[in-house]
Amino acid sequence: MTNAAQSLITQTDAAIAAAAVDAAPMPILIAPHAVLRRKTREVRPEDMAEIRRILPSMFSAMYEAPGIGLAAPQVGLGLRFALVDLGEKEAREPIIMINPEVIAESETLAAREEGCLSLPNQYAEVTRPEKVRVQWRSVDGELIEREVDDLMATCMQHEIDHLEGVLFVDHLSTLRRNMILRRLAKEQKQKR
Ligand SMILES: [Zn+2]
Image 1 (tube, rainbow, N blue to C red):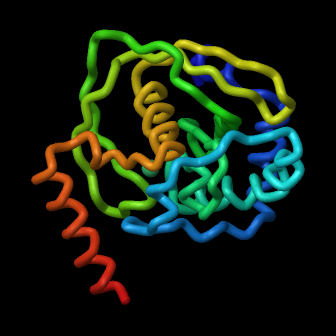
Image 2 (cartoon, rainbow, N blue to C red):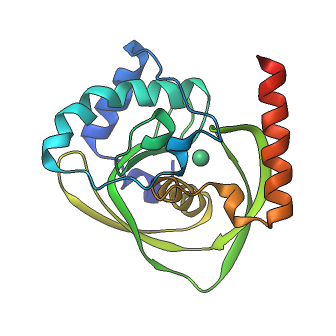
């Protein structure tokens, strides 16, 4: 684990993520579900008890998939929070971001292949700012601000997009986006 990633993890996040082993995974919504397109509202202090209650089930869903990020709308919740974990199964690196915001971004861009648990089996190269400065609250209410790059930058931007009702395919050309969404719809239909 890198020092950068390590410094983002709080003991509370680690304890909540560890509880995922005993939690039933929440079902993940698949595009074009309407909830995925809705902008979420800010988390208020009075929401935190409920959020803490469901977090282990959200981690359980993300780890089972498996995925490296999961935003509240993907499990049907219209609240501004998301999870990220770039760690391995044997060395989890869970980060819970309450009310995250990108507050600065680099002019340099980076392209990386992205996928999404709400668009299973669909991948495309997405170009985004290479580095971003992100601010969020921990579950304990602490204000955290970090500059991230590489996969962490991609992942955090992808998750924060979800909180605005934006999917990774929205960064592609209309042609490419429609192609992916049609393919997804076809695959989902065949599964039923
Ligand atoms: Zn996603």
